[in-house]
Image 1: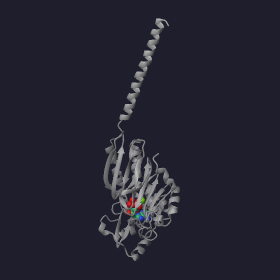
Image 2 (image 1 turned 120 degrees about the vertical axis):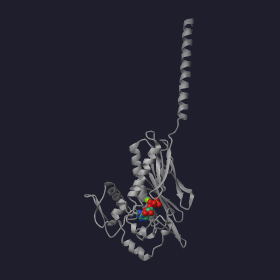
Image 3 (image 1 turned 120 degrees about the horizontal axis):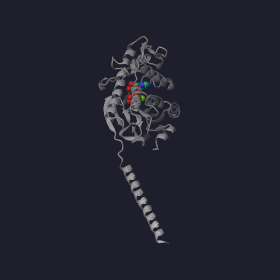
Image 4 (image 1 turned 180 degrees about the horizontal axis):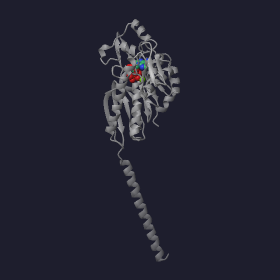
Length: 351
Ligand code: ADP
Ligand code: MG
C-alpha cells in the first residue's frame, strides 16, 4: 500500500471513530434528558360540596393547574346549589313546589330526561322521585339527629307520593309537571352529572389536561396519569375502611360506588342506610356495596344506585345485563360474596 493510500485510510478511520464518539454522546445525552424529564406536576384541591368531600387532582401545561382546579370546583358547587332540594331557592325546589307546568332551562331538562332514562332502564330501581320518602327518613338532613325509622303507615302514605312515572316532561315546550305531590331528589345522579360537567370544562380549557375528580368516592377520570398511565382505584371493603376488595385501572371513564356505609344509622342492631327500595320505601337489602365502571360518571352513578337496589333481588341480572347499558358491575353482598360482570376484567388489569 502506498503511503498516500495509508494516509487516506487512517483519516477515514479517524472520521468514523469521531462520528461514532459524537453520535454516542448525543444518544447518551438524549437518554439522560429523557430519564430526567420532569413529569407533569399535579395540583390537588380538596373541598366540601355536593354534600360530600370532593377532590380535584389536575395537571395542565396550558393553564395553571391551581386556577383550573378552582374553576372546576366552582362548577361542582354551581350544580350542587342548583339541584339541592333542601335549598328553597334552588331550581329543583322551584320545580318541587309547583303544581303546574314549570319551564326548564336546557341543562335541567337534559338532566331530568337522563334520570328518567335510567329509571326506565332499571324498571324503577333508580327513581329520582323519592324526595318525600327520603325526607321522612331524614336522610336529606345534615344533622345526624334528624334520622328515624318511620312507622309503616307513614311509609305507605309517602310511597303514594313517589314514582318516576309522575314526572311529565314536555320536550316541545321544554317544561315539566309533577303529579301526585311527588318531590324530585337527584341525590343518586347529581354527583355523576357534576363530575361529567367538570370533565367537559377541563377539556374545553385544555384538551391535553390530565387527572381526575372525585366526589364522595365517585370518580371521573380527566386523563391518564402523566399522560400515559392508568389511575389505580381501590374498591373499598364495605366492612373495613382501610381494606379494598379489588382494584381498578382506569385511564378514562368513570367509576361510582353506592354503599350501605355512606349514610346510615343503627336502631336495635339494624342498619338503616340511605339507598331506598322504591317498591318498599325501606332501605334496599341484600347488598353492601355496588360499584359500576362506565364511560360517563352519570351512568356509573345512576347504575350503581340501581345495582344496589336490584342486586339483593337478582344479582345475576345486574352483573350480566347492566353491561348492555354500559355499566360494568362489582357487587359485595350481605354475606361478603363478590359478584362481578365478566366485562369488568378489562378494568382489573393494568394495560
Ligand atoms: P352516594 O350518594 O352515597 O354515592 P348513591 O349514588 O347511591 O350514593 O345515592 C344515594 C342518594 O340517592 C340518596 O342519598 C338519595 O338522595 C338518593 N336515592 C336513594 N335511593 C334512591 C333510589 N332508589 N333511586 C334514586 N335515588 C335514590
Ligand atoms: Mg349513585
